[in-house]
Length: 104
Image (cartoon, rainbow, N blue to C red; front, top):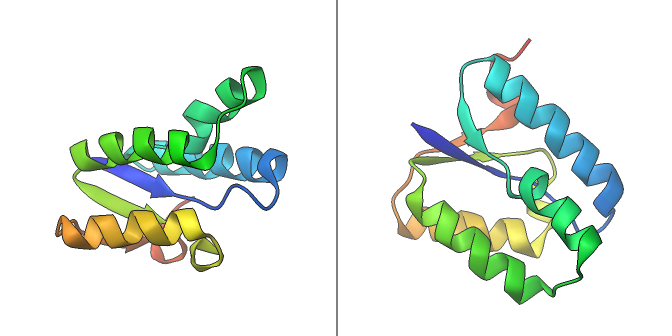
């Protein structure tokens, strides 16, 4: 399975980039195949600025290819995370809560 990590970003991009990377590695180390849009796109955004809609349209293409969704802590405080969750629900994808996973 390929999991999509839903993680807040905009309120503190640099901090959330580090947290997303840490959580992505924890998931990979625990055996989850995971795509983290923040891990992929943060450095690109630093190189060339694009708006919210640009990144969301790209992220939604990837999300549509994934088999499930993992919600990172504080996902509910982000409009982008809420949008991704709503899409996953429409796609009938399994949804996991990062906090409930057995990660070492």
